[in-house]
Image: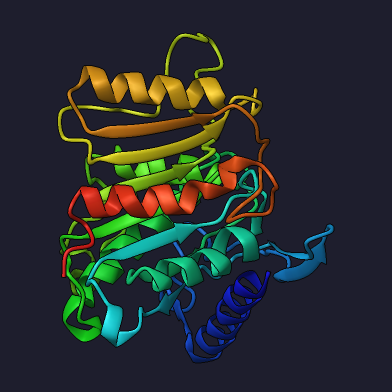
Length: 294
């Protein structure tokens, strides 16, 4: 009991310290968010909801990246871009975002928290604007490798639910972009070196239950992935299994964990089920794959 309290105190202290030191970085120059110069959008709003008082963010029109560096004495040089979920309508910004950055820092991984545009834009694919933000974020991290003293070849992406779908889209992209590029940022790759997908949504085709969604293109170049989902997450569990099969059939490295119990949306550990051990398993996977080398 005392050990758990000390652990909780450490996490709380680390979270407070990093939140104070982290400054959001706009992904796009003012007035230059792709395709949105003439849109009139509601102001961003943040609310605390549910038993866990989860920080819910809505109406994001100014996407940002917030940098959470790992402690110097434990910094592996690896970085993960974190994508909260929320159905592409809101962002579960605390338990699928800031808390995850705290955990990544604790294992020596730098974190970059992505606040991508929501809700879905009329007339566009649900992931269109968020994917632009994710690709710009990955390139921005790599373009600042010297400044932030990180390894540009160990930049991963981690996402929950819709953020897991977004991470999958970035992971399986061929690197092409749908926005005007900036040579200072976009001259480096926007494809992550690995992906961590936690109860990813929208992976299964709406028309064929035995196929991946048509926008997901696994091929011989798709980077390694780690996937977690619960058997009881009925809406999304088959999509995760289909993604694993596609990776296996293209001889790509993929580790899939389907837990017997656990629902959806628990984030870092907001559940009493065994599935809350996924961070330890994801950390072991990153180490096994060589992403945590010094």
